[in-house]
Image (cartoon, rainbow, N blue to C red; front, side, top):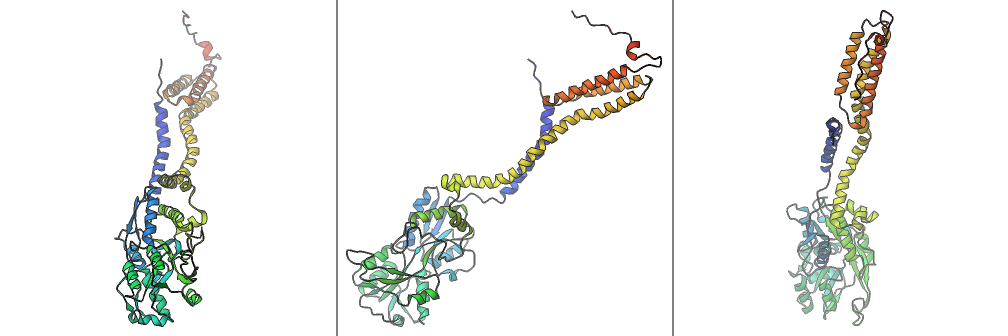
Length: 453
């Protein structure tokens, strides 16, 4: 069985398509420089103390993110101001944090953005039952706990007290916070404590049920919310905590900022969708003060809304994220960003390269037509065969060179047509009249016939 090798065709393909492949590789390399790296599998969230709502919510986030292979490490802190400082410091390793509304003024720059507000976070003012407070100025004579240094509770309490002309240096501040402050309020060691927390906070629940502790109801709510736009006015209805025990015994007016999920400027955009989906799962069902579906929200933000979060709120999670696991969706999304420019190059090339390849292959044949046509003109212009031998040698040279031409089998037809045309010109040459008036073929002696046997 005969085997034919089409090495010339392969070489031609390499010369034609090689530069196109190289161009595609260069395009991939350049595009890759603009593709975000793969999202990290481990991130750190700054919360607050272990007894606060931030910490409790972070544990729920951790369980949700673990389903998609992302490990969420929890960093305990003193609160929102410390969280902001950790986010702004590049060496702390904190990627995301819970931050209380109204604390943006404590940021050192403009590198932080909010992903969403998550829930209302009321300012609770718990007092010992014997404490009397008829006006804000009475606070100056009380021993109070206003939260640790670096906490959002302390920042908010001081801001509201300053509205009434009471400053930090005029306060008697107890060096007690959290559970220690709650115990001191119960036994009367301190007069009052402030706490910014979700009503789901263990500490809030304990104090609302504690004997000998009462909850302050705010007056002049509209004045506070007009002065501080990040505040909302809420009402804790009578019996909302416990209908059987009628807790609280009366409606309580509360002021509330919102808790925000905040990231730094280097936070990976693919993780934004993941965190917001987790936030919907945790906070979307509503709460004591929130209607179902009201949070997470692009309103009531501490910092400007993150661009990826804005896209999420405008159009929802991407299609790939809704239908595929997180890492598969992320991989395809990154590959698509690389492939699109490549397609933009390949599609025009696929239209241009085949005609170029076809032209280069046929050019090996067609270039001999020019020499053959020129020779044919000379033969037609000559009356006699004075130059027949010269023409015959020229035809023989063309025929010899054409036999050396190698082209792919798909284009062999053009090569054989050329050889037929060479034969046609040779026949015309053989039929040219000689000076004696006879044609060459007639003057030539007949060629011996081969024996068929």
